[in-house]
Every structure is written in structure tokens, then in C-alpha cells.
Image (cartoon, rainbow, N blue to C red; front, side):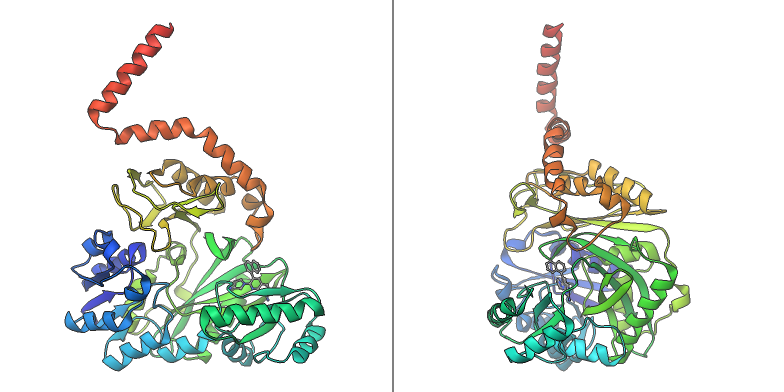
Length: 489
Ligand code: MV4
């Protein structure tokens, strides 16, 4: 069994991983950049070591430095979390070579799934449905024209090293195709150092539905059901839910079986996610994420399974004790990503000090955060404050509970996207479960509604702020208000 885990990450996911380690009686090690000296993950861990610098490349991405620390403090394993080094095959390979357990799949599998052309080809060979398109890199424009003629426009050009929508271009005809390929290649080359691109039929109004899988080192693989992640903005997911509103037992079995067979075919180990694009009853493999994901808690809530704990047990060489038939989906969970950003200013980051902070609670509410009152959100990293997760016996109860939890949430200092979440959760289409990846861009009324909510809640915000005033100040304000009221009568 692993005895000490170095967590090569920061903020909420670092704390999330350390929680699982504590539950298992495993020691934890934090690493931190200069600006993260007072961050919560450094206090939560049993030991913490500085990575001098602030920029990711000098700190959370510097894997030689990180492996050096792991060796010095005798950590026998490293958990990479999400982002940063989590899908870097060279990092996983270095861990393997240095005899440190990388809590994730093998470096070979990370590399295989990291190239979207190779992933597509490998998955197609298992017989799983992939979106019609090219089977190889597209270098020749004549070949691109020929493929597009076969599958029909619109088509989408994607980077082999991509993911997260970077370098994607849509083409509606032959003329646009040439530009799309040129543009995509250029962006892919500069963003990933790999200009290789491929073509797929563009699915116009899809849902993003992904399956969580877990696999041990002995060939046992199960899935934990799906997550619907269609509510996103500029490829940043904002709200995720489990189960998907469109899911049936029958479809879950069908898609789940496909997800498991894909994982089996590549000898996948540890936790992973198979992303599908879904439209009108059809589904296609899109890509595989070889890491723990931001939205993993909604699956934990509806299955009762601690995914990070499973990751650690699997990496320790334990056999999976769960069987597919043990997995039951209980009720419904929603996650809202709470970001320090201004929904009225194009969602610009609003990193600043938390002058007041009180997270929601009560039945069915979970908050995974990396913050506390007086903490300053640094501008160096992504501005997520927390993940607010709720459970309900069904989708309606889950939505009501999320609205209640958003009402309870007090964040004073940065601008946040809480009013935006409130607007989405009262949107009729959302309530009906009519979702697609274009939901946010199509529902322009949500922005107006967000503005209305902000205006309507000004007095509520003032009331909430008062809980963070010192007693003397509160008394002084109360006296002023009282005098005012008396004089008015
Ligand atoms: C697609 C697609 C439609 N058809 N592929 C976006 C991120 C990456 N994971 C895959 N993505 C998409 N792939 C095919 N064949 C639609 C998306 C997509 C999207 C595309 C354009 C603009 C916004 C989008 C939002 C979510 C998903």
C-alpha cells in the first residue's frame, strides 16, 4: 500500500486528493509556488515544499523539480490531479523510471490517447462508433476535399494534439475548408508544437455526455455511469449533471458497454473518462481523458463511490472490489463551477481578496474549495473558487437545492458567476433538460437575467455583508438605521 503521496497540484483538487489520502491513513505532501505560500493545500498537507517561482512552467509544470522533491521526502506516489502535468506522458514515464507510482494510467496509454488521430483510429478498430471523418492526418488539401465530399459539409478541422477546442475550425464548403485547414495547422503548431490536423463531420447541436470508468491492474473494468456536460462557455464547462436528462437504462448500458470495451482494448488502468458527442439518439466517441476530472464529484454523489480513493487503491495494486452490477445510480447531482469572474464583463477573471466568505450547507450540499476568508485568489492560475455540488432524489429536487445553495453562498470581494448560475437554473429550457453545447450562446436571455438578478440582489448583498462587520461597526450601523426609521415616523 502507498504510504506517502505527493500531490502535484494546487487549490481544491489538491485538497480533494489529500482528503482521500487521509481517509486511507496515507501521508500527504504539498508543493507550492511563491504566490501559493498561504494557500490551503499547503496547510492541509502533512508536509509542504516550495517550488520557487510563480509561473506554471517554473512550478507546477516543472516535473524534474517535483520528482526531486518526491524523492527527497520519500513519497512513494504522485497524484497529478487535473490540468498541469496530469496528461503529460513524459511526466508519467519519468515517474515510472524513477520508481515512483504515478496515480493514473501508464505513460503509454496517456500518449496514445493524447494524440486524437491515434485515439480515433484505435477506438474505431474496437468497433465503437466514431464521427465520420479522416482516419489519418490530413496534409493534402485534395484528400481533405475528397473526404469532405464523402461525409458532407459542414465539417470540423481539429488538431491531433488538441483538446479543449483549441485550433478547431468549422468549414461549410470547399472554399472555407482550405482556410480552416491552414488556420487549424497554424494554431496547432504554435499551441502544441504539432501542426497535425484531421477532419470530422460537424455535428451541429450535440450534447456532451461522458462516461466515468475505473480499471484495476488485473483487467477488471467498470463504468460509473455518465455525466452531462453540455452547459459550457468557450469550451469551459460551467454546469455538469449526473445522470444526463436524456439517459435511459437501455442507452446507459449501450454507451457504458462501449466505454468499457474502449478502455479494455487499450489495457487502460486507473480512472478515466470517455467523452461522447450525442445527437438524436446517436452517439460517437470524441476523446478520452486520462485523468481525474473537475466534475468527478457528481458521479461520486450518485454512485456513493470515492473515485480518488479508488485511484489510490488501484495504483497501490489492489484489485477492484466493485462489480458492474454493484453500481446503482441514486438520484441526481448537479455541479456549478463557482468562478471569480465578471459575467457582465465577458466573464473576465476577477481575482481578488475574499473579504467575506461563507459556503452553503445543509442536506444534499457539498462544496469542494481551496479558499477561506481573507484568502487572495491569485491571478496566475484559473480563477475557480469552488465547486458547488448538490444531490436530490430527482432532477427537480436537485435543481431546487442548487438554487437554495446559490442563495446561501456569500462571497464578498471578487465578482463571481453565482448570479449567472442562478439565471441558468431558472431558465425554462434548462429546467426542461433541453441542453446542447450551444445552450449558453443561444440563450442570450440568460445574460439579461443575470443582470436583473445582480440588480435585484443588491440589498440582499448588503445584508449579507453585515455579518462580516465587526460588532462595533454593526452596532453603529444599526443605531443609524434605527434613528432614520424613528425620524421617518
Ligand atoms: C465536435 C463538435 C461537433 N462535431 N466535433 C469541442 C471541444 C472538443 N472536446 C470537441 N468539441 C466539439 N467537437 C464534431 N465532430 C462540437 C464540439 C463543440 C463545439 C464546437 C464549436 C463551438 C463550440 C463547441 C462547444 C462544445 C463542443
